[in-house]
Length: 150
Image 1 (spheres, rainbow, N blue to C red):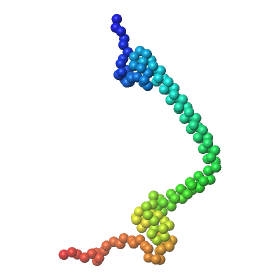
Image 2 (cartoon, one colour):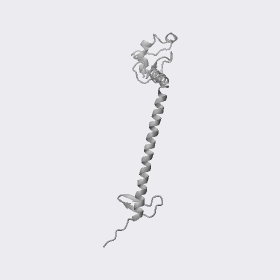
Image 3 (tube, rainbow, N blue to C red):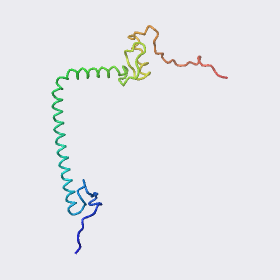
Image 4 (tube, rainbow, N blue to C red):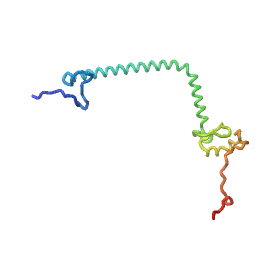
């Protein structure tokens, strides 16, 4: 009759088995002790999870009580952020603005193309319109302006 021996330190079912926490050799009783240790560890982890859930719920309730007091500051902060976002939008196309009018600093543009496109309308309200700040229109080059190179 073949005597079944407990596996030594190695792989059992794809898992490495070894003495855990100094509970003795992995053998008949050692394997039982290992499983008891793992079961105890699992119970401890479950207990920790339950404690964390309770702490999270407590934090949510505490935050909920303070949330009513800070609603005014939250709404003010939200409106400030909305105002900043609107101010940083291109007045011509609505995309994110990268530059502003160098004359009045009141309107923003995403590109020089949009700035030039909007200039016909903006020049009437720009505070620097009489002061010489302008976006020059590109003029087509005529045949008279070009000199032939010999």
